[in-house]
Length: 392
Image (cartoon, rainbow, N blue to C red; front, side, top):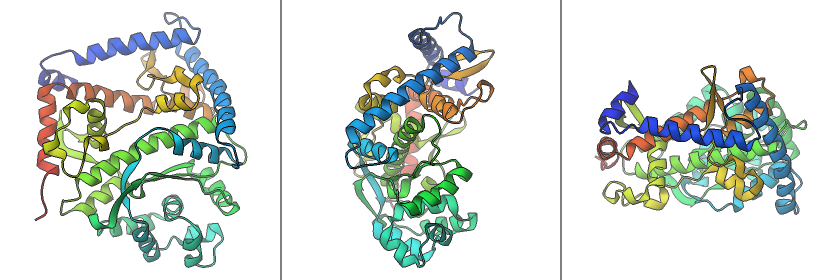
């Protein structure tokens, strides 16, 4: 029903059919590149071939990271962090000032994290640890009541509590952090944390027994988090003149921000807008976004392209984020994050992951429909109504 409404709004341009045809052809090409017959490959055969390709690519990536970024750094996570600091992507973010973050942490102290890290006093912990790392760990380790209190404090924030600075990549790797993350990873299954309000990606130490392809997965999820942070940053910049700015901060921390504008009865995720103007920069509307947001703010990097920049042999994965093979009416994702998650967790074919493929495909479909003037005007109307308001 949603597609029917988009088709009517776009003048029955058959955008969905065009995209479907394009992706079917591209998927067949990738299957052939794996040495399989696109006309006679089962879903299970493709799944295992993708996992084997990822295994070999991960070994090459690990060797490259050690060679390029291993000087003076001893852990795989440190190598990944250094690679991320050097890749050519936009880095400017609109983030909470460090002094404000420290003040918030003092007000609502993450005592469980303090205990886990082995500090006797909060002041000592704050002196030796970065606020973003503490906030990331606390979000996983502290209680739901603690998180609720933090969100209530965020509601009181003002635009003057934020500043423009570069996105930060940190990887706390002391013995204190290894002990903390060993318990967190076992329970929460997270090693890459995105602290959007602080413009920081936190890479936790990997467990002593590293799962397969942990290097590739860490790099991929960090690149994904960098896009999320940049999109959240742009949304905050755009909303800084609104009287309910603190509410907006709450939103970007706890959920993906959406616009009041609707396409086929659903709110539009802000990431769609970010990705749309990143791809079609010539359609940037200065009268809507200026003066707080410029065209350069609306950037979005291709995770697969950056991966190939770091390790050229991984170029196979470029343009696979929207690809799959439909077998027995169910997709086999060729999205490298899905494949990495499935392989890292040693999932059988029946339990394979397809979430990132589905999310990426849905966004791609909406972006293509937005290029039709009638659909774009619906989205622009929502932007004008929601984001260009001045404080009362």
